[in-house]
Image (cartoon, helix red, strand yellow):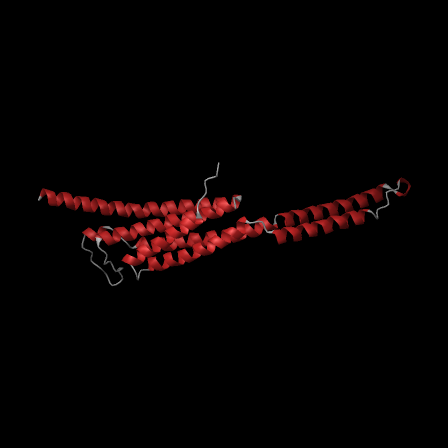
Length: 241
């Protein structure tokens, strides 16, 4: 049975459609700009994820070659040790054992470093991309921060430093909905990294982005619910009168 996987192409297509939808209603908005940047990042992530998910053959060959040289050097140095019983004393045995142990310890540490090098390089690239996604989520949150649904119903006494609020109820609702979609898609791009590279550190970082996106989306939907309640209240008021 074929495993269930996220399709990167479909996610990118969804982001592209979202960017066009935002452009249709809010062509000069900062939300459209960040969504466009997010789209470009998602396209770059496709290549990035392919690199992370594929084996790095040249690096593996180089590490294997270095390890073989190290093992060869160890055995070569051991071959010079005189193991004849009549020539050995306790002091000599301790000295030789200590030298061999140190060589084996250093070689083991070197082997571990080389064997895990590919994983560390891929992890570093994945975490760098995930950090950019985390920043994008916070930027989107900044754009919806001043979109207060209560100003639709009540007359606001603006101050010189008050944000400009010119959206209708419908426009504000669509704007908030677009913000929620953006945060959800950020989590989906992040999930592609853990899908192709299920490293413990990467998976934990992806889960953190999922929690962040869910929290931001919940906050946005609270505003949408307030708008719906205000609209329903007005409808009931008109029906009574």
